[in-house]
Image (cartoon, rainbow, N blue to C red; front, side, top):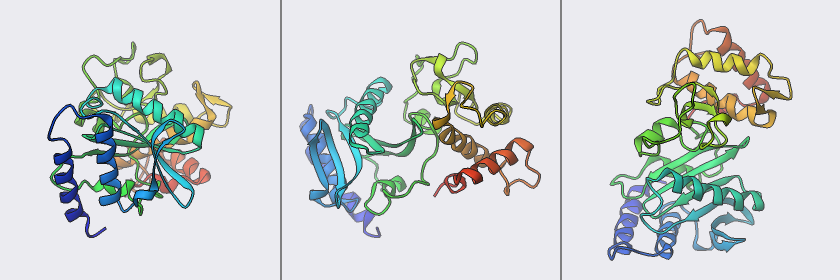
Length: 285
């Protein structure tokens, strides 16, 4: 996508023109998404289907559906976490019905996309559509990068770094009664409004990896990993949680072969991921 910078500048100008009146409708946001996917990301106009079984936009090619996008009126989706969660829940419901595992939500201002992996959401891209420079994450939504699965940064609605950066973790976000942490600090948080469902704290409140809790979280999973359930987490969700913890460990330089003498918890984690064929999902592009 060598032509990306020029295409991005053209898209930004067209987007600004579409938004020049203020109080635009949802149709304008849909038009902005079409401009992005057809003018920047390499898809054709025919690859975008509208109102498919209630889904606002479905991105498809050669009969294969790649992405379901829920679109909201400009300025209504971000930075309100509850609105984003609701939009992503809608997209996920439509995607589940159509057997699509990539979903997104946008209001024409920002675009958030994620993959559904083991019952959790794995970040694919969070893009500010007004940025002066084309974001690197665009590649993950392009015709050429949509196939890749090694892009993701963390499990839950948005990674802690992303969530804090764009204000998706408000001051009044629910906190776990014991750990006093938001959902973004747990490796497993299937319901971000119900702290009782959160498992395995591994990050600090500011989003940084907690060096004490991370190995404990890994040990808590792997000591009884082969059981039907581990710590209340469905076995089908365990691979995604393991990858989440492995990415955190890798970011801290704890995983083999990074570390010269990795702790037993990280050695065991690497072994399990290798057995599951998930080792290549740890490294970010």
